Length: 270
Image (cartoon, rainbow, N blue to C red; front, side, top):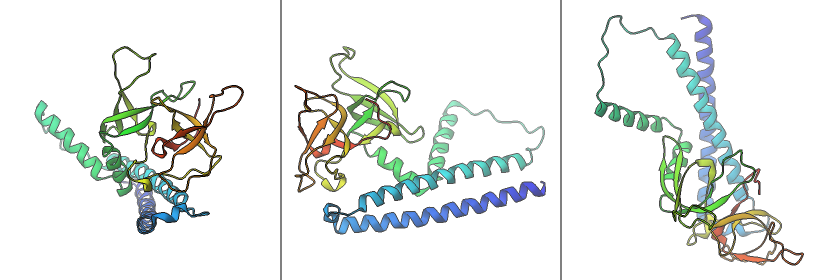
């Protein structure tokens, strides 16, 4: 083992510790803000309150720190693997039967998940908890000319693959005649809807804000603009103008329930 190798491992270890400490600080701030919102949920409705924006920023920081921690941990594992001596020569390797192989894979998956940071584990648990729920899903690939978003039902979430299995229960007339259609989609293609019985889970979009919303009478979501600021409670419906919905030279204003409106994804193409 050479001195430069040891120095590199020690430097990466220090960097890993720094990421973990920074992540602990961010998670502590997130927990404080969660408690504050649970105690006084009405604060988010006050003019000028930036609690939700601050919470989003903290989650973004936590995700970035988690990604950095995973990357540097992977680097350290590779460095240590390269320095570890090989096993004894001539020692036979025992063949693993199919049953044991499945068990080994299952244990490996559980071990991989247990090594994840708390924020990543919480994110995976939150995704798994969506089973049976309706969510907004982008069913088109990233390189498609336009994004198509539908209301779908979550059938299963694979924590190892970080992949959703969803069901489009009401495909449009232009879909296959099979009646229902299943998709396997990555986490980035899914946006949970606010819970209709829990307004605190919903964001409050001000007039002029671009959103993604379910078009009335359909199970498709389109880009829209909030046009009225008359909402006094989070449970009030939104009045929206949908893009490309022109009638007689103007955009009609349509009412959409608050739990069918989500943030417009960055880079949305329609």
